[in-house]
Image 1 (cartoon, helix red, strand yellow):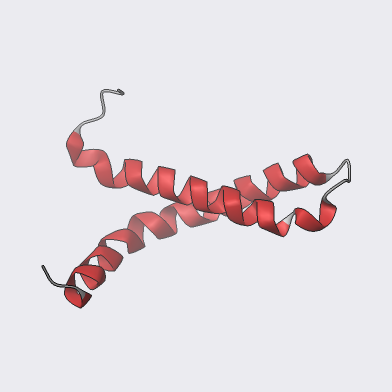
Image 2 (spheres, rainbow, N blue to C red):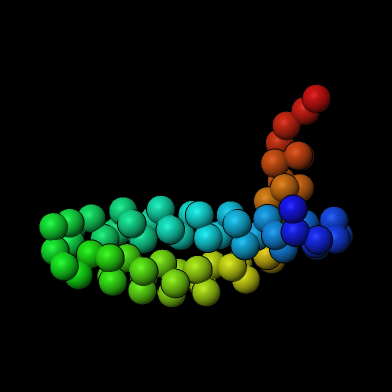
Amino acid sequence: MLPIPRRHAHYVFAVIQSGLTTLIASGIASLPLLGSDRLVRNWLVSWATAWVVMLPVVVVAAPAIRRLAEAMTRD
């Protein structure tokens, strides 16, 4: 494993979650180009752009979303 201190787990989560979500969403949005030679380039450009935008959003929103989910559920 990487030697990342546990106190930075929130940021590691944000990088992984935003990367995976934007990778899937940009792939779905690129489906109209299936069979085209532009598919991979379009997907990668769309994914990189979306990730740059979503990473700060996830870093800021994840703690509030966790608290909301905990407030809406019970043991």
